[in-house]
Image 1: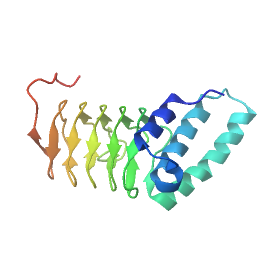
Image 2 (image 1 turned 60 degrees about the horizontal axis):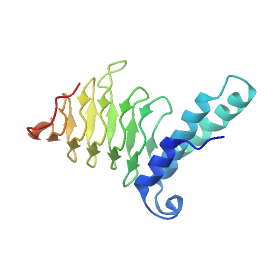
Image 3 (image 1 turned 90 degrees about the horizontal axis):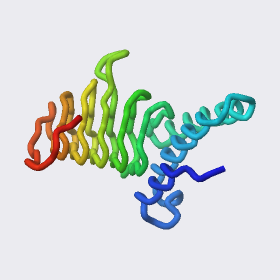
Image 4 (image 1 turned 90 degrees about the vertical axis):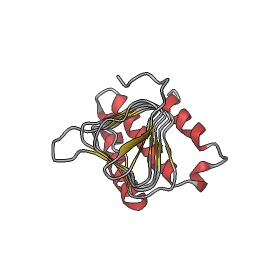
Length: 177
């Protein structure tokens, strides 16, 4: 069985010896990556057994750590979670590579069955930031602590406030696609 390159990228972002003993958030990332790997297995008995083992493990981690990273969400390599607790990612959310979440971050829909955010790569979320609805957050963005993002944020921009507004946007960054 090959090692998951996404998981290796996640581990590199923690950059410490024995992160499982020092950072509880890595437990949630590991369970997320495990669920994604199980989904790649061919249909059969092994996949059913592993899936049956995954769900109680997911619920335990979700309850104990307060981090909900459902395996159906698409999260790129290099996820880093600082200060675990109160983190909710919608099962249909898309998050790019090398993103950083802090405590209390929510990435979800605004109403039942509504659209969900698409997050670019290298995005940093401050504590308790909320990104809601069918918005697009560009690459290399920063979302300030306690911001409520309800509209698109272009590449390289910084958004703060409730509702969030763009307070910095570099001139030399290409627009979001």
